[in-house]
Image (cartoon, rainbow, N blue to C red; front, side, top):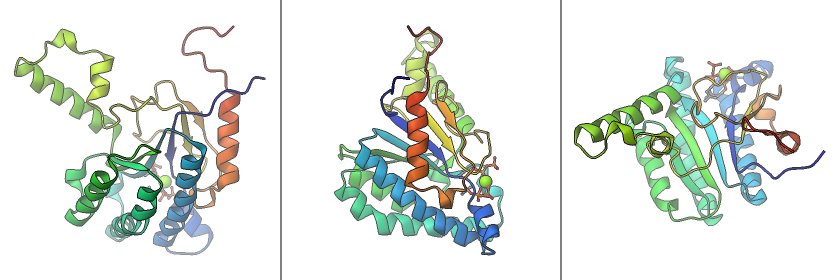
Length: 237
Ligand code: IPE
Ligand code: IPE
Ligand code: MG
């Protein structure tokens, strides 16, 4: 079978930290901490491989439902990640973008992510998108609201609204569609991640828990992707 190119845009639902902690008889926060370690190597590898965009689901709009202590632990890890990683990411020419509603984050976290975005905005390497307080439906509702407001102001007519304009109102504006969506831990659902952007994504659901997702597992997913026959509704010769 012909080997195709690497995906331009990889999205990952990093799932299984809680089960990993349970398996190791540790507190859930330690599962999340271990998850951050996995994340570091996947980011570095994506950058080394020359993948254009990597979108990571770190915290969903639904994750606020969890115990206060877990939410606090996740928010603390987020701050830690941004302060410990930002120098290296910047040196590696990584451009960081937050997907999600930053206004809904605690002030310190909001400030840290905004600082990271501003500092790395001119970088031309890996486009690293971190989804925090992100929900695909909320994103689509936001885009609809923005376009409705523009129409009310007379800046556009409803007829101008097409897929291309809608894309420009999403957090992912300017990025290619997701080519490969990986969700670890064996769960096979999107959980409100990049609903619009995954329209033609290839899906991969490795059973490994996120903290155990290593470079070998990542390469397996990338290799499997390269063997997929993508047709986009047409026919391949
Ligand atoms: C994913 O791991 C990380 C976040 C949602 C932040 P989980 O915490 O969902 O892990 P499981 O699904 O309970 O194992
Ligand atoms: C999705 O995982 C969100 C993240 C990985 C950040 P969840 O563990 O929250 O999703 P459900 O609840 O199993 O659908
Ligand atoms: Mg989960």
